[in-house]
Image (cartoon, rainbow, N blue to C red; front, top):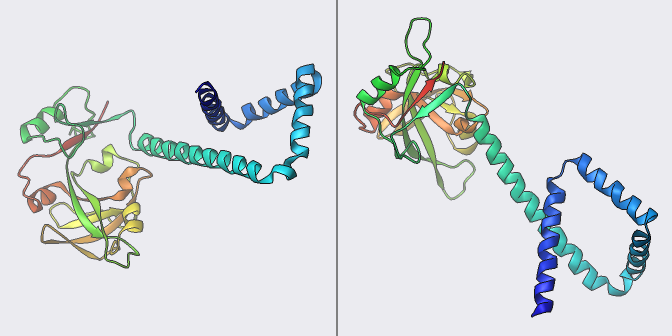
Amino acid sequence: MKKFLKTLGLVILMVVMLGVWVMLPWQGALAIVVLLALWMFLFRSGVQTRSVAAVGISTLTQRLGSSAVIVVGIAGVVGVLVSLLAMAEGYAQTLRNSGSLDTAIVMRGASANEVSSSLSREDIVQIEQAPGVARNGKGEPIVSAETVAAVNLPVKGSKTGDSGSAQIRGVSSAAFSVRPNVKIVEGRAFQSGLRELIVGKGSVRQFDGMTVGATLKLGNQPFTIVGIFASGDSMESELWGDGNIINDTYKRGGGRNSATVKLE
């Protein structure tokens, strides 16, 4: 039992050391390599370690099978660790790009996300009149009251007709003011009061039929795609349209899921 625990401890220690090694910047890794080399050549214990390592390397051909298993095992651990760290960093970077210090998303209290939130017309008015909300040159509050819904669309390249879920966002005319990073890269912006959509570059890559001039059916109502936008964040996977039209299509009444505001 003691031998097993000792071996387990060594494995855990190795994994932790590999994790630290992977997370270090290249300057730190280089410094560790230099220090290790100096220790192996200048100190007695290091010289002994180097001699033992040399003997082990010289006998690799005699135990090629077991050595290969160890190398493959360590490589697998490092590969999985690097993949997880890369995924975590990519997700964190996407979230960082999706917000800014001068904007805020207002939702109903205790709501975990926009889908579970609900704001009434009175709530929207109170948000627009709240202190700290920026105003444009006309003195109007820069607030985009927004509705969020989901729709299933055919996945691009699927040979079996698979569909995926896309998020539709009904926005107000202030949406481009609170999110200045959103730029139309093809076509034009939708017009208020019309069944028109603009789609993100991410949704164009993911779903079929995401081209300017194409028609989508949302809630049994035809919508025309009039533009494609880029934002550099998670919004690129969404479809945008006029908030009032989206509300009517999905029978949401006059309420909204959230309000995105520009702060002073």
